[in-house]
Image 1 (cartoon, one colour):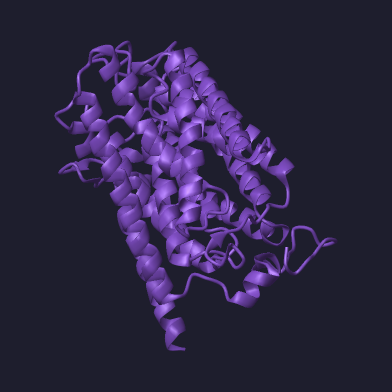
Image 2 (cartoon, rainbow, N blue to C red):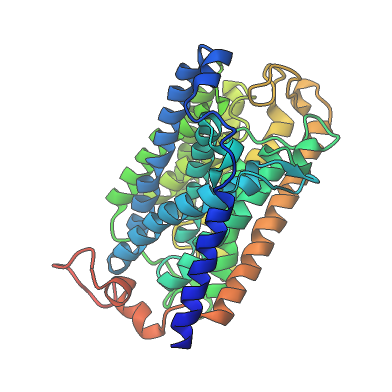
Length: 457
């Protein structure tokens, strides 16, 4: 009875708090009339950004299929559910709270302090557009982690993780880079820059995933006498389709970050995105063949995504040849990183840490080398971003290196604390019996393949 009373009182307080802030006077532009007065071309920009945002949202099924394909049949429902909840919870939490922290009025370069519940000045067509754009990126960052913690994490614990990433981890680092925070104001080059999110989205997801995989420990059967053993996924076809969906969605992910339909640089961004993905896939497959004498499709698929992750930060600032080099290095880094984490006892079923974490850092750093000095910071025409290889000196590279260190420490550090606290409070790993049977039946009561149920697959 006491528990029900406390719950009721909490809901009442939440209700009162909500209607306390809803009394803000509407000072925004909810009809779009002012936006049209200021810019007659605004509708084209709005449609452009929304279409690109829809493409990014469509990456969610791409991630879901890639992760499910690389994991076993007995956990497919669980993985699909986690990817769904990332978008569901992210939509609600980021819209009401996370966007204010990320893009609200700056407080000492650390976080935003305005825009709660998208009320007052934030009931505005431009703010709503920007919030939706940042939201689909938030969901992407959150869903990356599901692959790293796959096949052994409790669903209720995943709820807690997904909420905290959307509320704190993604918005705060995002504010530092995209919201006018301290990293964007570094006295080197243009400050730390990240065109579409190698750091803000991918490195955040990758290194929070690393923290989760470390706290959870490896799956049963992954290590025998201390040596890593392959645990094949149930459908390489599903994984391949997932990667093609991601590749397609990435064209919205990167080109939409111009935030302006009139920036013809979108052609450069699209080509660079494609070239880096192709280069990453090729080099990963070639390295796998060199090592194993097998044409490893799984490695090639992860190589493509590695190239996409790496080019996401520099895509607007580099030439095509540089995009190929960035992709080639990303594919090789991904392969080496997968082997490294396997060998030190960290079980990452889909390679999320290597693909998104390691290659996300490389993407950030690559700007300092390859930025060609012909494009500015986001929608700003000048100053131009210029890297070391184009005579820009060390400044931009120093800014990018600082951002690399910060995103790793922030994502891994806060992620590790978060998973440790969740483990202490509710326990984050299923029991050995549940893991062996599969999470689909135990946690959801709905096997993905009801006519093909095996207890140990």
